[in-house]
Image (tube, rainbow, N blue to C red; front, side):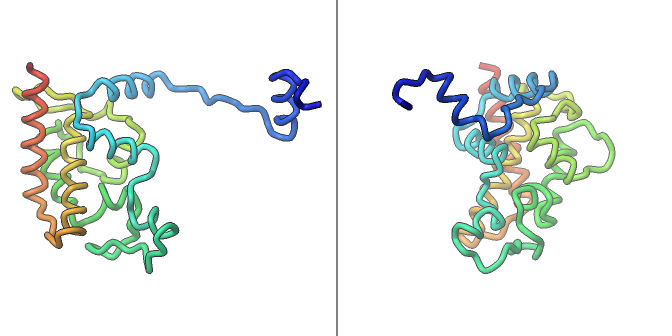
Length: 187
């Protein structure tokens, strides 16, 4: 009986107990954000980090605990619960890196709220962020990527090499990456 059914009959049969699929309406600014994000130049490791971030697959302790049976979900730097947002944005151990980098690269728009910054970055909603006038030819996504990868590398360098993260080194590395990207964009 099943072998003689058409695709639409099979679909109807399998889907009768399931609610219909409703596609969410996409906001116009979200589409432009995704489009501008996809056209940015970045290293494959940075794009991999963005993919993990957007899909909440960053290996934070909260995400790894069910898989690896970790004893706790606590951050080794501050003792807070290590979620993706905490690991990359809101941990006090690298708050100065974000503050200093934003002061160097972005137009100030009041005090830096890292919870809001993390939500904006994880939803690709960066229209409110403006770069300072400079010789650098980079997009907002590229500027954020430079610091994001620097924080990421510092966290893993601590994990694998027992090197304590230094906020100034994180910012310095991000600025080197930013200049490098700018040079690529000029070519």
